[in-house]
Length: 183
Image 1: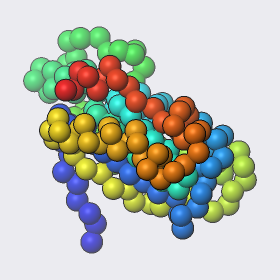
Image 2 (image 1 turned 90 degrees about the vertical axis):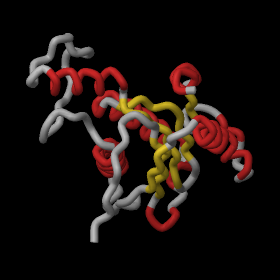
Image 3 (image 1 turned 135 degrees about the horizontal axis):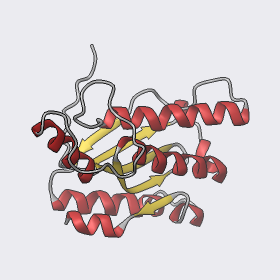
């Protein structure tokens, strides 16, 4: 039986995904740098804002929200019979395979995980799957929960007693401006 997801475009998602068999893959900073770049690029491609992330040795926490401009453009095209009144920004963007209601969190996560796995396999000649196929996502539907998630992402390496490198880039990222706009 497949797991069904409810897609809420107006709220951020708190997503967690893990490495296979608790592999401590991200102890190597180079892997964390690659994953960070991929998350940011996938966010642009799939129209999601990366609000915060924390890369731990064997798992990753990401706080993302669908880009509001992309959502408004999709709604505008739906109202206007598929015609786009406003110019798209950036000029070259990817479009959904079916419909134009925007991308789902599942599509975003598939892009991040599959591209990261491919990069690692090609660059480091790793022949096996390194990430678990599923991920855990929760909808952040109120300000109190949003603050709790941000606090959790920020203090998770401290609570886990990890070295100082996990408290800064490329392991940790928090976009305060975008988060403040949500509060």
